[in-house]
Image (cartoon, rainbow, N blue to C red):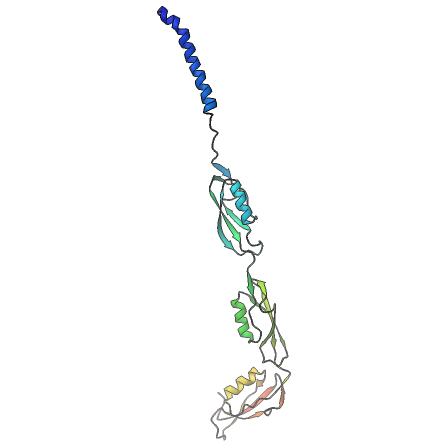
Length: 245
């Protein structure tokens, strides 16, 4: 079909105008409204285990992530503040802005050796265990202090040590010799307890049924009161009544 003459005459101008408009639109689109780059929303989690918490936090921030402090636990192999584990782990893919939980070392657990000099070995053992420590070697030496009394410890009381550590004790074995105490007039049980505490051995008691004293009262002793006696020696007692209780 043949177009009218006025249409044929106007067609080149219309085509040129449309083409020009298209070029102009393209120029505006490119230079005035340039295409936006693709937004990166995923990042690879860096490995921060073994770093200090501060350094690990900075590295995660540089990667577009956040650091959250998780569990804190004692670890003898890592100083205080060192990152022990991370979640998500290294090389995992995380969303930008996501938090990474870091478990941090409290370092080596420490405890102080308790004040145990001057108390009995049994009380010292309980105090050491309550401090999360252990009783090590126990040595006895002759000493004027009562038998079983703690004379010293290694490490010394007040020393800060790793948990668990052993505390060695030096305790008194009693003196080489003591003055024999006078236990006459005491009950057999009282006399035996006192002599045992002094490191003496109480032998089989002799019973005197003719004594007017109450039953089980000590009426005589050997060695005699105030005589020197070596630690570990045997003491003989005579008591009133029928038999010792």
